[in-house]
Image 1 (tube, rainbow, N blue to C red):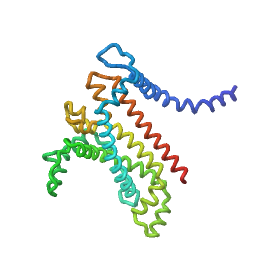
Image 2: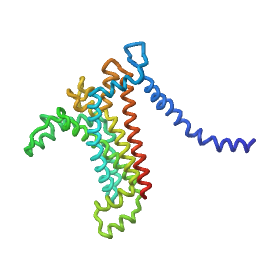
Image 3: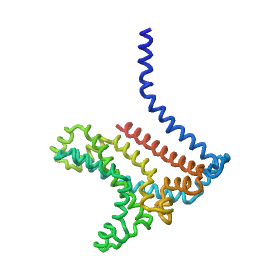
Image 4: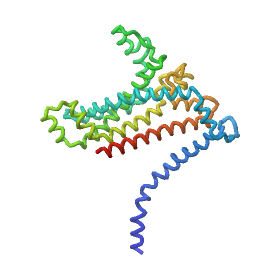
Length: 303
């Protein structure tokens, strides 16, 4: 009997230990996902008690809507403008902090401060910086004779302003992830490179980045997923009123998440249509995750 209990405990205990996570994921992750897919196949609004089945009609309507493609272009534009410089700055910052410095812990903790700052506070401050009449950025541009820019009105300028908010918020966080990976790189490599006369920049390109390549890919994918779901920065940048929902008066910076929110909560509670938008976004994220898998496999096979 004791032997049987021992074997059962050995085999079942690991599954019992990890089961709470999977149970909670099934309730709060899988069920909403499946329910959203079901809702997306119906003409589902809160203003009606009947929800007739419409098949893929919501998806066809979505793909034929020019505002959807406008939101997709805006999302990709902001994603590229924020993710690329964000990762470059994070790599450089992590490389610098990984060197011998005084008060090293203080510098490392300081990198996390932008991430713990409220997104509302970040947008308020950056909205002042990018203000048309009294913003610091326009004052600097005017000082150099480059003229003033109405950052919120233009497509490219509004994307740059929103990307700056995202970059400032997440650079330090990503730098800490890179720093954790850099800690595992043997110090002897840097010492040998220093003796050979390699500059810090050469050490970053030739030693650090190749050594932490899987971490770089992970951060790229996570940053990309966040970029596809960006919501608060453009919504708050547009200010109160309907412009906050549609991303400016001309939808110049409406992202996919704002587009989904507009149809789900601002235009007759079209939950079926909003659910179809959510599933299209989910498909984009799955495509990117698949690209990550292919890139990772190619890197491993090339070693």
